[in-house]
Image (cartoon, rainbow, N blue to C red):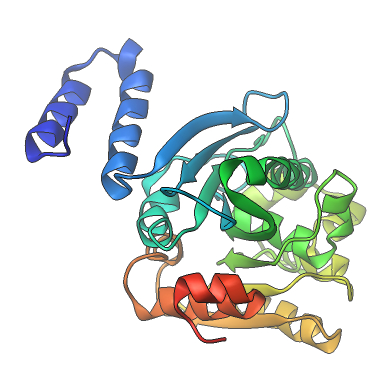
Length: 302
């Protein structure tokens, strides 16, 4: 069936009138329809297993006739406790923007609190990265050209791996091009936990100073760190200072780290990325510095 207003209306009416027992499958159908509308010529594969837990799944969005395609691997946020790989703010604008440019887009789920704490979640991201690198050639992708993107808690996890990539290498991942961290205030976990902070930080990081250090991108940062763009919301009091502190420390080590401040809400930092705006183009400018083929597909001169 072609994408039509009638199909939209029927899908919405079906969801609204369905019994609760069928809400899950219907929600999945609406997600599929939305993705097809955003990328009508894409091949979409859902819930590919990158490890054994039911949460360790990813969705794959393939452009038409992918050949040596760079890969964008997206990690959702949600205070380390909630969130989903198929959420509109996580997927829609990014798929619409970058699949037509010849990028593969991957969105992952990972184990959440209380079943898994942040270090275990970072390991899940590393496992997903290793899986994508192993499978990329079969998808028409280039396993050497992967960029991690994370929002909120996902940005913390991405930043933690970027700061000390050996953790990802130990789980089978290989080097990736770089990372984009979308509005994480948790760059210095030790500082957060030693001061006044929101309760959800206690739920994530507990009471152990040793664990705070182990989960702090700033503390884990060393000269092996991979390139990172820290995007922060100037509408928040904690995000940009944390990002600025991390970028300054990375730069002192000779690491390619950049700061991008945006006058956007925490939600908009994620949702607006991929829309046709100056913000998206600034993120693409950073991505273009990571690899000449990425730059060519983005139409950017590094």
